[in-house]
Length: 189
Image 1 (cartoon, rainbow, N blue to C red):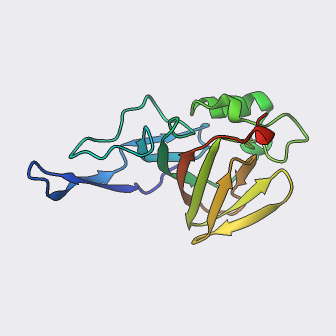
Image 2 (cartoon, rainbow, N blue to C red):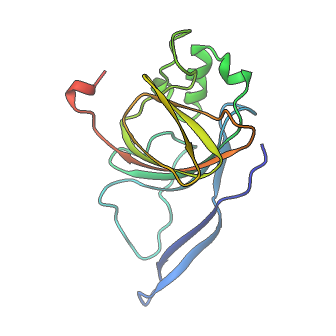
């Protein structure tokens, strides 16, 4: 899938403590997950703790590969390009779904258990996620119910089991801000 790059502008401070543009260019980490039918991840930034340390000019904390969830106690912002859904996803087995999520270090997030699963890529993370649709549309699928979100809509995902389906004929670009969270005892599985 060919997608436009996502521009990342990072600010910092020079040696005199004055505010500067530290970086300005395409997101440095981009990866398609799940093969040609999968989404393109544009990793923008992460923090390793909250409150996040603010120094003069360090870069983004290093990570090995693309990770679904933010670092424990941290945050993450990414942009996803989600192509129109095809039979590859509709016929995906539970094992294939776990392998899909394993590419982003989260095979345990997969909730696909077979024919009764509402969508092959249903998943759950211990996070609060803000999803902002930038272009196109997606169907947000829950255990019960679904809704279509379009450009300008914002979804607040509160550690719920969910899936995303692009039932349109064009790409959907959505930005996610992910914040590490902790399930209350009644929601732990």
